[in-house]
Image 1 (cartoon, each protein chain N blue to C red):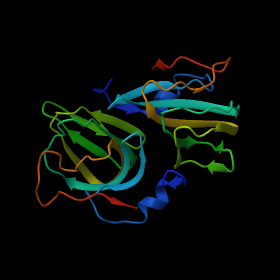
Image 2: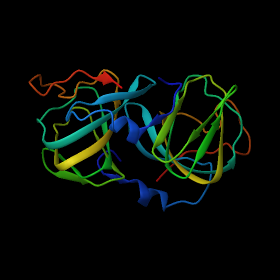
Image 3: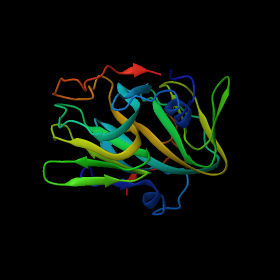
Length: 120
Length: 120
């Protein structure tokens, strides 16, 4: 995968599933993922993984214990490890994630939203 | 820095210097940097660091030993560690870099293009 360039729009066109990040690149033990998000996700945290959310299209709110962060296209936010968070999108948002390769989408929670990371 | 959102366009408006990546985020020992590139850089490699180039604006060519990769806006390429490369931009390109926090812009080479990474 490291030897081909990646067109983010073309990759986004390859899936419709929401809240199920797709792997599009790996480097230095970290993963680059793309996700489509709409509605409310579940509160969770990652014990050891910091997680970067970069909005490519749409708007994303990251709810945190004592505040919320509103992200428009071209804005990113890093959720530090251990911090509870809940992504919420009013309308579909397209998001690039940067996080350790083994990171699970629902973090410490395992439920019906937990998804395996598929490579596309 | 991890506790504020980052607007990529606003950060890009804060500097004009070319070929001198600016630090805009850190997570998991990795750095998110922004750079403006125009003209030809120097051939170099990074012994241990894989390096991701995501074009935000303009066009970037990454010359490699046996091929070159042309990147338009919204496309990224990962240069694996150890691989010689030379970025070339015909017109100014705005580029987001993901790489280990300690990565030097000229890799194994130290010359007049070598730049300290400033946080903005």
